[in-house]
Amino acid sequence: EDADGPDGAGLYISNVGSGFIDDDTLLHTILSSNQEVDAPEKRIRLLVISACNSAELAKKFHLGGLFGGRQLQGIDFVIGHGVPVAEKSALGFSEALFNNLGLGKSLQTSFGNANIFSEEKVTRGFQLFGDDAFKFYLTPSVEAAESVKRRILFGVSQDNTGAFQARDAELEKLREWAKDGGATSKNRMLVHGLGGMGKTTLGKMFAAWAAADGVKEAVLFLSLTDGSCMGVYSELAEALGAKRDSGFQEMKEEDLRALVHRLLASEEWKGRWMVVLDDLPDPQEERASWIAKDFPFGCGKTLVTSRSPGWAE
Image (cartoon, rainbow, N blue to C red):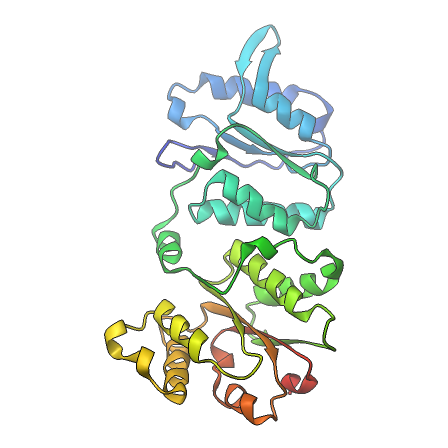
């Protein structure tokens, strides 16, 4: 299908058989058909080849050349696989790529974010051919555009996307949980263990992944080690839309907590956020009792990291 952006960007998606790789038949067909389109703005500008060892073919699609005695112009941007790629990785990459493009992000950003999902640790896993990919983008739907405007990343650094590669199994479980929107899906997940085992790093990496994926409109990472929330909740209240003239910056801690929790449970934000509550004390401790009692766990997705298994109850 064609999806027209401000620059007339066209998008081509096709599921083809092994002949795609075995010879240049489809290459010749697509390039010649593309060249014959009268309106340049309707031509294919992005091609994604989701097949193993397809990088060389992708390069051919991008460069074009002499085929069947005819000089054919290449496609502006082509993505291929440089090595054999597991089906799960390929699907994760493609889903993330198109999700990001659908949100109006540039191809360069979308490609970078999609690599987070590929689980391929080699740089040749996915290759993008084409210059100035940051200038290529699609026009998002009205709904997606509104989602982008509202998007909040709080305490999240996308530099953490590849920070901790030794716990892929745990991260994959968290990804599946994050994407599970079924009626039986749990809103809270716990990662617990002794200090120094990497709980915080895993939480940061998960938050960075969630931010890159756009799985929720608001992705939050809150460190509440000592149970105090004054500084972080004051900033979070403003990020969630609390007006400065409401006086929230001068509120007592108990009132500020109540305000933030109301915002998270409000019609505007309910079901649209994901938070990592990092390094929580035992829920039986007085300093953490307000979290266990008052935090609106049922209104979004919450990952808790703690030394205490008590948060599973």
